[in-house]
Amino acid sequence: MARRKHHEEHANHEAWAIPYGDLITLLLAFFVVMYAISSVNEGKYRVLSTSLNAAFGGPQTRLNPISVGDNSGGESSRRGPIMLNGSAGIVSPFPTRLAPRLPPVGRQLDRQLPQPMLAADRHQVGRARDELNTISNKIETALGGLIERGLVEVKKTDLWVEVAIKSDILFESGVAKPNQQAVRVLGLLADSLIGTPNPLRVEGHTDNRPISTAFFPSNWELSSARAASVVRIFADQGVNPDRMSIVGYGERRPVADNETVEGRNANRRVVVVILADIQPTDDGDLESTVDDTTGMLTPSEDNDRNGG
Image 1 (cartoon, rainbow, N blue to C red):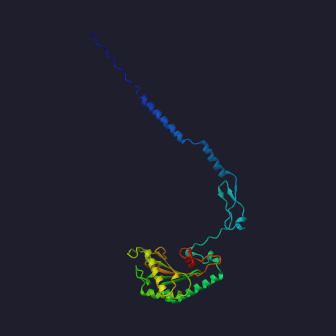
Image 2 (cartoon, rainbow, N blue to C red):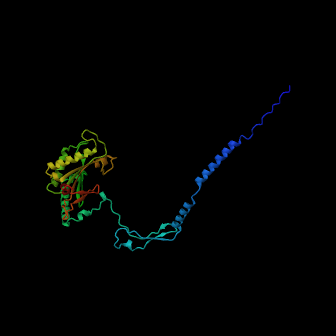
Image 3 (cartoon, one colour):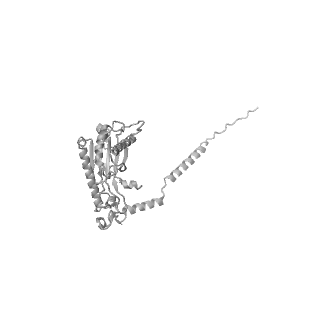
């Protein structure tokens, strides 16, 4: 019996075509997306190009000058317009007189009278200045020995007299109870203040060494308590309590570097500020003085009484 001959099937050599087609399709899609992302909007590019050309390559443009200070005919108002060089994009310099730079407030404050005081009667301002000079001379005479030793410093201006006393001669470390020397020193100072109507402000200052006790959780409380102790001694010596106020600054107003022993000693101080006694003007404006440390106007005693 004849055996049936079996023929082998031919292998499919075109199986690679399908994945190759998929790869080509993906590459085409990838390049289309990349082209879409990288293409430049020609319209926007032309607008930008026109703007840059007008700014840097156009004709000169005239700008009206901006007056600085007084416009009533100063040097700036007589100058011509500012020329803008279109080719270079640079404003041409022009001579002008700028307003003088104002001095900083505070310690470098100009010692002229502030604007609120200019409305007051000049005779009254002069009288207040003479009173401060008299008080300052009395204090310097009474505390001359301490001033020579550098334990007390007196500063005077047209608006106030400042007496800075080192706390080390008034209080023991970390307490607000005055010692016996404090009673004597503050008694001499009080004798110079009795009988004068000037408002008084007593400031307490400390160094930056932290304190945390039951009585004084921080230097705020310690400085305020020391200022209050000074005010109490003044009141016991006969100074009118209605004239006095207290401020506790803690370590926030140093006058020296707290990194040294001498600096901390200078920062521990009590400052008595005697303000000028100027009454309200005829138009109802009340007196104002300038705080030497902050440059801020301080309301007068009458202003405080009237709830201003």
